[in-house]
Image 1 (spheres, rainbow, N blue to C red):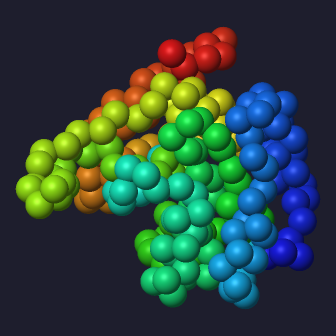
Image 2 (image 1 turned 135 degrees about the horizontal axis):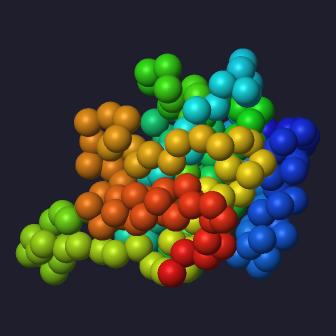
Length: 205
Ligand SMILES: [Zn+2]
């Protein structure tokens, strides 16, 4: 991936995100991640970039302290060659591009829609669940931060503007899964409602 440069719509997307998110955009970090992990990346070129049908929102369902780098490391450990998500929106609202979304499909093998989707992940666990704390299992329920939600909305709008108008589903709308969690899913629905308006509101929250 270190030799991968952004071209075409991926480069336009990168420039537009830099413009709209300012210091909240960390750029294309895939090469940096893969280098730090000592891996060799076998990217999967998207055979039909024009076939992108959806911009799908996920949570990582891991630790609430997860970051994009953890996701990349985890996916490498389970044998994937790249992070399974094209974009990561950190808890503090920072957005980074892991994989150029138009040129490459994410690594996770799956049904056909996986190849026609731009994957966005908010690291963290936004579904009510139990966590072990001081030896006791406790019910926990985390909310996404307003910074992360704002950045996600800007990212979705920008994908929409640059790539083309596409669906904005939560993962659970494509497959039987709790992802992106009961606490994040309503925001995806609301962003979609706002995004469909004309003119589209420029900010979420
Ligand atoms: Zn998911």
